[in-house]
Amino acid sequence: MSASHEPSPAAPGEPAYRFGPLLMLPGVRRKHVWTLFFISFFGIAMMNTVGILQAYLFNEILRIPPDQQGTLTGTLLVTQELVVIVLVGLAGAISDRIGRPPVFAAGFSLLAIGYCLYPLASGDLDVVTLELVFFRLFIASGVACINVMLSSVANDYPVDANRAKMIAAVFVCNGLGIGTLPRFIGGLPQRFIEMGMDPVLAGRMTYWCVAGICICLALVLLWGLKPGAPVRTTEREPLLATLRIGLAAARMPRVALGYAAAFVSRADLAVVSQFLTLWLVREGMAQGMTVAQATLKATTFYVVIQLFALPWAVIFGIVLDRIDRLLGLAIGMSVAFVGYASLGVLENPIGNGMYVAAAFVGAGEMAANISATSLIGKEAPERGRGAVLGLFSLFGAIGIMVVGLVGGWLFDNWKPVGPFLYMAASNAALFGLALLTMFLTRKSAAAA
Image (cartoon, rainbow, N blue to C red; front, side, top):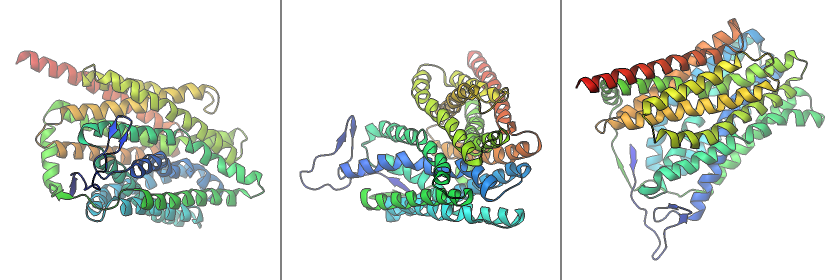
């Protein structure tokens, strides 16, 4: 089931709420909108915490051998993405029936359970892997609920003419959270150690603090979001029918390229969230830092990436509206290539040169994602548009799973920067495909 939005009944004489240029539907009040923005600030950052703290967990709490950390990271990432693929549709359908707040709150509650359990894993490597996979199921289920609810509520509240602006506002809140919270969370183990805790307890307390934040966010959601389900729902296309329509559209070269762009661009985001701190913490430890100090240093660079990604989203979004979307994709992939390739030439990955490389990575991952989404949004045919966008998301999920498996193997068996060099090669290949597609489609148009 998918929501078909209709104005909710408002109190007699109650004016529609306006937030700056954003006009809300009747029945949507100030409390509902501000709650959405508040949750948006925390939402993505809370989901990404599993990757930010993973290096500390592996090295300080669980003592995972360094040559097995990449493969384990990839296994956990694939587990999460499979759960998300299965559950996003179900979470949306349930929220259509019982309302957004319970499902949204359930997402943060599941995150809290996962974060409570994660640092309690123990035993030999085989047992640890099974435990972490099981604990990751809770986190993955929470991610599925939160992802679909963030977009659903952002679409529920504004009038149709303001929907894109509302989604952009939510995106800005997401970016501000991602650009600030990881530095705070990554610094908690060191703060607890300075308070007299041993490193293992300091790590566990950090996870449990994050779990407590998630519980508080769940309570805020239940209090502040607009209650009730959408007024009317419509049936969705069956999954197989959706796949057939989406695959048939791939006969159009630009749509096929859009699917390839999803495969690469979503992996761009995943490789940063899952492998960056893992790599930089290892480098910091090799240079004499404690795990807590190295985690703080690594999250600093993670924040730099996100801070450069946010303004680039605005800049590149304006550029894309003025040029051919294929050219935009080529530019986006070239910037991403420069970012990831620059990581491979750093002499000291935790030195000052990393600030410059991190800036390029942030601009690159955002350019790749915006250009890919912009291309498929323009090229998806009116008939079957939902199927094409659904398959675009599926290819993105497959890209995340592949970078988890390939990147994890490269991390353990080649060198820790391997996952990023894999992404550099992937972005370079897509850059070439974009130029080739541009040439072929223009040649076909001229011949016609």
